[in-house]
Structures are given as C-alpha cells and as structure tokens.
Length: 231
Image (cartoon, rainbow, N blue to C red; front, side, top):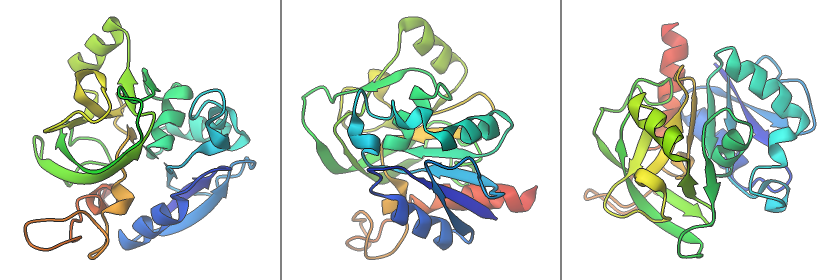
C-alpha cells in the first residue's frame, strides 16, 4: 500500500506521519502542496503543523492549495484521507468534514497526553479499535476548539459521525467533547490529537507498563493498511 503524506509550507509533522505509515507496513510517499499529481497513492495523510503560517485561519489557505483539488476529488471518490491537527483544520476548511475549529477556549496552546473515547470504529482508519475503547494520544494545538451550529451538531450526533471524543477533560472547549470526526462514507477522518506520536516504543505516551510506551496511534495507520489488504 502507498500512502501519500502532503507537505505544506509550515508542516511540522510530515516526517513523523511518514514514519508512522512505514511502521504500519505501508510505503510513505511524500506529496508537495504545489503539485496536482498524487503519484498513484492509495490513501492520503494531511499532517499537523501551521500550514501557510495559519494566516487567515488555520488550514484556510492550505484548503485551496493545488494538491487539494486532487485530494478533494480522491476523497469524494472513496480514497481514505486522514487529517491530523492542522490536517483536520484543512479538512473542515475544504468542506470534506463539517463544522470549524477555533482558538482554544482558554486562549492557550496545549500539549498533553490526551485520553479519547473511540466513538466510531467502522471507518477505514479505526477498524482495529473497539467502540467505546479509551485510548491515549498526544495532543498539541492552539486552535482546537470544535464548533458547529445546532443543526450540524444534531446531524453529526444522529449519524454517528463523531470518531473520537475527549475523555476525562475537554482540553480546548470543543462542543460535545468532539476530538475527531468522520464523513458519512467512513473514508475521511480528522482529529486534533496526533496518532503519529504514539507509534513507537520509547516515544509515545506513558502507560501503566512503562514510560513512553503507548502505541495507540499506530492502530490508526494499521487500520487503513488492513482495509487495503482486505480489499
């Protein structure tokens, strides 16, 4: 399986995402924001960072970058797309996922190991989780407050489009404790926490077994590889 990882000006976690893809058993393919060629990839990751310096709004300029024309078309045709942090912001700005993301409620940048509840394990990115499972994924953002109008929230909740929900504490004031979403088809997922930072022993969140041993994020990348193999 070939998974493209898009680099925008200001991307910070593109190399981390590439490594997560490789650890899941797939080939990581670097993609550039200014290109229209997806190089025949089977899935796409939009990584974290501060694309285009977060000018206008986080993700707003990246959402109209040349490569996003191809990403949007591929996503609408069923290709798996994962947006992480800034990638999630790009997905909502590109209208591949509903709602929006604003400055954290307390106006502070957050960095913490965050507990999440898996709300939807039927997407191509979440099949290796159990519904209702609590996992720990590193979080680092300043504009992670999820917002949507009442009608959109009702649709999201009614259709089971919440992929992940914050557990224990809501770190940024997101409505309904929403940490991540999926589209109706289950091929597009966006979340604020960083699964690519929980894929390798010695570099992930602490667990009861050992410091820095958490690997919950790896299962997101393994899920999409498993779905490709099964197909």
